[in-house]
Length: 505
Image (cartoon, rainbow, N blue to C red):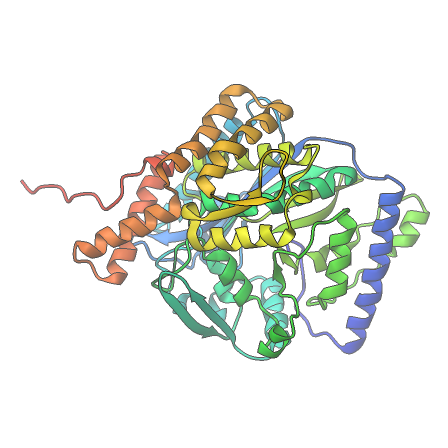
């Protein structure tokens, strides 16, 4: 959805024309795949992080336009609501000391942005869902002043035809309604990109789907919404419900939600783009003048603009990406599973774990997705969102007997997946110092059963026990989180609770 979109009205002919163009784009993609026109292996990865703007009181600040003016860097962009920003790190080649390089670039970029936000009495916080957000913060008047967000909101609201219902039953239960998609803006995430060849795409995507639950278990960081303690990673249910174009009747009929884990392992990138056309009506039926098949006939590379735009309105947790760089098309797997934060070290550790693990799993002789039902991967994702580091997972049994077994997520990670991630990073050519440092962060989280979500919940309850009101405890937890985030030490080392007040005199 990074493309420029101009707000306007659509009529029936626009939608039919767009559907026809989508089919031509899909045919164009089929030809590109058949003709092997895609880029050769580059081992390229990319990183995006969504951020929150917060005042010194821990409350959200609706200032992204003003802060971006002061930052004045193309690396930073608007996001859905006025308290959101996004930072994009240029692609890097996997290998060497890439993770330390990424960490240093992020420290420099975020420290600069934080200073600029400070000129407006705000600061930047990396967190899955800001605990101090209130329902009144997430209304359409607080959406960023960008045409594409206004248009997307209008089209999703029109498709649904009634208020959105949020109903998340976790430690506590939240039920409320919204007249817009603004609650989606509460979800701030990390997106990990990996460029892959068409021949490797299905294996990498299947591997990413298989480990999505594990990623959430060790990386959960979103336990609060609107003052309620919900799931350890509340972003997925919130994102699905706040973008759900289906009224209850269509949900009952089994119509698929636009925020979607998926329902099957795949054999080609084409499978996912074809599903997009088959299952999801257009939200933004905007056509350009390119004829993709004519461009191909003339030896060119089509932009497939409609296919790309439509793909951007289907919110898969692992999304296929078609793009062109230097005139050559390529494919990427975009992993959208992880929440932002807590620290840069934690973000890079999550990235190292993911890139190592998908490399190793994609190259196994008996891949995990041939030994585990897709439904088990989806159930693992759900369990991890609900229970975080304490989740239990279904995973293929080791040895010759086959079948699956239920296991603690931390046991699975420490005994089986961390050694695989280590081997995968070695295969990428990542140096041992980088590999050991960042995978060590994941191992320590498992050993201590601690991540961002567990720290937030424990600190909030300590504050409540100390006599703070619910709102005051959430604000104090957020302020303390910001302090520790800026210290840079990974979350498993953070002391639980609020600091003791300094003695007088």
